[in-house]
Length: 301
Image 1 (cartoon, rainbow, N blue to C red):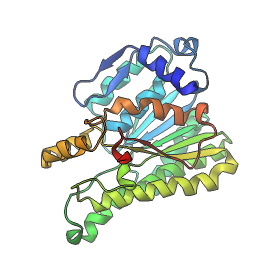
Image 2 (image 1 turned 90 degrees about the vertical axis):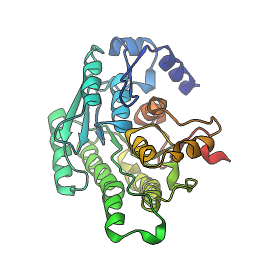
Image 3 (image 1 turned 135 degrees about the horizontal axis):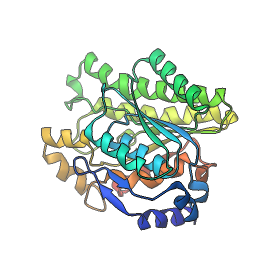
Image 4 (image 1 turned 180 degrees about the horizontal axis):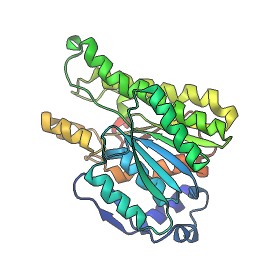
């Protein structure tokens, strides 16, 4: 019932759109307005979050969701020296929420463990806490038959999607433990970690996302006694800059992936906002070690 109330609140929220990549921005007037609407356990008031891969795509969508739910500060960590146009527009939108907190950008490389540990420690020290981590940095790699992959092509994907994912979660968990704060870590996996996408030869990506799902389970078991929850989120095919690049290279992928969904369409980034907020909040306090699938029915065939 609680999740139905939350979804109803989101439906009543006025939405504006960033035209370029389809990232949708909530225009709630203030954090107090969110509380008055009855957000309850879904509220993220005064919490501090990091989102890797937060410059665009699902990472930026996660940052917006956490901000709209009342986070004090959401730090978007990504590789570019400066954030992109979408991120700058998103920051202005968050600033207009009137009390919903700050959207910050930090340049870092999730493949660099020592640098990432230091960066996240500095953020936690500055804010005095660390509550939420959304590890969304990832790459798809080149698509080719499995017999043709080189070691370098495998390592390129695994370095970001496996090592970078773990380093992100590890860095956040260390700070949650240091401040003895209950935390939530969300690892962005994919349905490609559980099933093979039809006519899509991307073995490194598939196997990396399978590793992420298992990574969440193992970390959830180890960190539960610290009151740190770890879950993976497996979206179906979502319209993001990553999928746009895939469509540019192989236009037939759009029809192939759409037809596999009961809804006969791809997902929109904002359609993951509710589940990401739920996983980050106290509303999901008994959920850990789970893999949440949001795929329009793709894997239900």
